Image 1 (cartoon, rainbow over the protein chains, first blue to last red):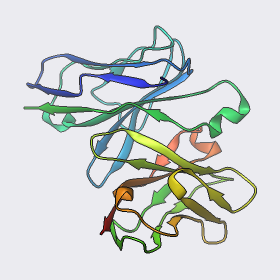
Image 2: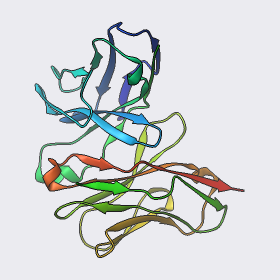
Image 3: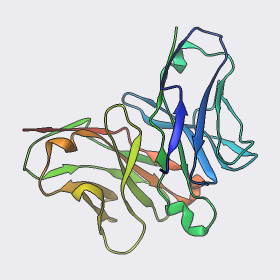
Image 4: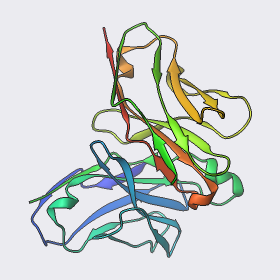
Amino acid sequence: EAQVTQNPRYLITVTGKKLTVTCSQNMNHEYMSWYRQDPGLGLRQIYYSMNVEVTDKGDVPEGYKVSRKEKRNFPLILESPSPNQTSLYFCASRRQGTSNSYNSPLHFGNGTRLTVT
Amino acid sequence: AQSVAQPEDQVNVAEGNPLTVKCTYSVSGNPYLFWYVQYPNRGLQFLLKYITGDNLVKGSYGFEAEFNKSQTSFHLKKPSALVSDSALYFCAVRAMDSNYQLIWGAGTKLIIKP
């Protein structure tokens, strides 16, 4: 089954304790992205990656890191989490290889609800 | 600045009635427009898209959307609502001069009452 898998689904941590949220896709998609969802704000992009070893900042990258060493994986790293990073996080992927791929829909994981106290 | 607006935080519709979820956008150039749906405790799912051509596009679960260039709108519609359509709906636009990244609306909560 084609899917984007995020882990964990729920995470409660304390300020300053480094954490990683994993994301893996099995569709051989070049493009992957991280979003955070907050009430009334919709989805805001944190980082995205057009392909292996290529990452770019989205709209709200501060306090986050990513890496793209393999095509299927795109982990989100919070080196020193703070309470304002409490949110619902989504990983997504899509094809990115041809001029038409900008029309391709995103495939989303089921989300990671992060609480930082 | 490029933006997407979903003017209604919540839309309430009786089951069997037609529904409309509104979306307007402001981007430079020709937009690619998308609708996604989010069910509770799930990620977003793609519903439909407008790229070019016929202004009325059909998508999953009986939904359709009408692109109106003069009004810069892309409203989501369904002729007869189901209780199972209750969810959070997001409009998004991809513009060429936004480095092809999606710009998202804030979402509209659709509640279908039996």
